[in-house]
Image 1 (spheres, rainbow, N blue to C red):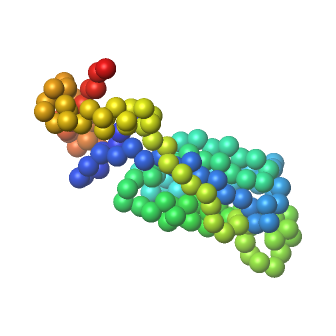
Image 2: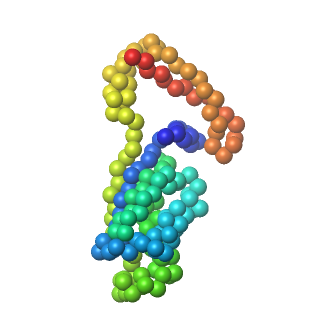
Image 3: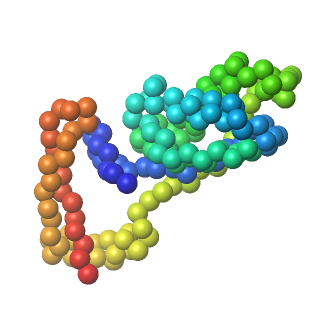
Length: 163
């Protein structure tokens, strides 16, 4: 997992996300599955800094790992993915309009999300050794990191914790 840079900070936010079609119907097969995968990934067209890292689609649910910068709410991005993909699938696949004939929906409301983070053991070591880190007893290294959108380089400090 790569650290991303924004104009005022650095981040590493990835979210596992799961959602289902309305009534958990097993409609994510064949053409619908292909279209759903395509349209869910289109979020990057509107938000270039949002990336679908991994996707697995079962007939009755979607699993994603999506990278979302801190400037966006997770619910906002997932909502757009579901709205846009659902609208396009309903428009293009006649059989879906028969399955969800009255409601004009495709996805069930809501979703599950969590976070993907650093190894818990790494975090514990960092917190445990914070005093030594603050005293400068751990080695600091400077790295040249390319700025987003090709605007030169940043010097970044990375703390190396050694046991």
